[in-house]
Length: 80
Image (cartoon, rainbow, N blue to C red; front, side, top):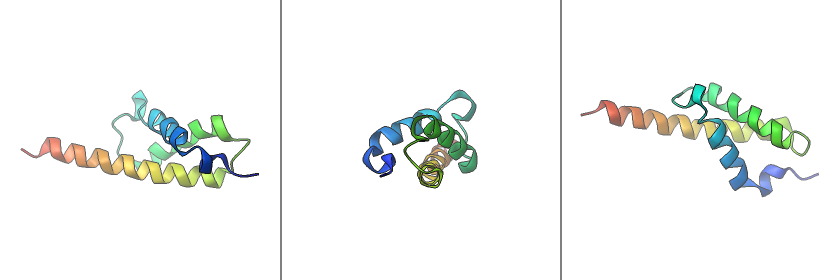
């Protein structure tokens, strides 16, 4: 069975963005924490159609980008 993540990239990224913008992690720059929230969200949608390894890889990639972006924003806010 083909992994759904490969065909539904935009939807996947939307799910991840929503999960990583929830109250408890909205300002987090911790990639591991962000990836954990993303993985939980993806599992609820794709557990039967995609391997955990595949979901985890996408979550890690997405979380790294989110954390990097948030760090850059924090730096910009702190720099006069």
